Image (cartoon, rainbow, N blue to C red; front, side, top):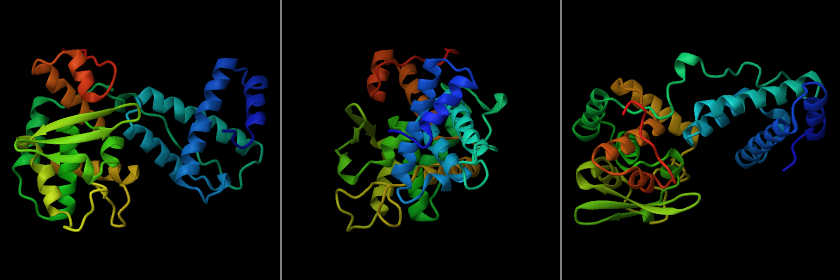
Amino acid sequence: MNFYAQDEYSAYLVEVRKRREATIKSYVLEISYFMSWFNSNYPNTDYIQISRVILLEYIASEKLNGKEIGTIDKKISILKSYFDFLWQNNLLAGSDPASKIKRSKREDRGNDSDVLNDVDQRILNDWLLTKPITKVQKAARDRALTAMCLYGGLTAREFQNLRLSNIEILSDRMVVTVNGMDRKREVIIHFGDAKPILEYIASMHQEAEPNFYLFPTSKGSALSQRVIQFIFQKISKDIGVHVYPRILRNTYANNKFEEGFTREDVAALLGIDQWKPPERL
């Protein structure tokens, strides 16, 4: 798709920034990708109303979708370049929404293959499987989300779109049918690990239809990526362990590898073509 002032911005990259053709193509592709996301999530909002909050929401959604930190920083750089161009040429109604968005600090980047250490896993497992639940519905939901990632290896996008009809409960295990972008897979979670998910399902309204989202909002729609981010920030604060979907998925994969699964086996469990263990192994 074309975006606002695409030709002018492309000319600016060539004549002023002296960018190569391949670089310009990558810039145009990334801005088109952002605009597609913007139009999908804000269909009634004009581009001149794009705010810093909207840009941060997009960045958060890309993080939740598993994009690496280096990729995220590249996206930020491109968006800053584009909106700075619009602002310098008086093509924005107000200030530059990207001007105060910062790339990751070196010390905060971590490693995209990071996994939870043994101590943090024990703390998390204790919270998931033994601590009593107080505020039943939301607390049960938060534990179920965490269990889906830690014991099933699901991504945020995958559990976000799960429906009750994707869950099959057998005699000793739960089978979760995950419809990924390129393929479908079945994730098996045995009852010992599935306890938080089973308790959450039991707490849902009895009238919930099979096509009902497994993790819905109060209006019945899928959880937004911003809400998912907030949920994991709250969990991290509550238990004292920094958790988010990617590190939980990485931990699931690493645990399977240490149990004796081959790299090919782990990749199949994750629904991807290739997987490699953390370098420290």
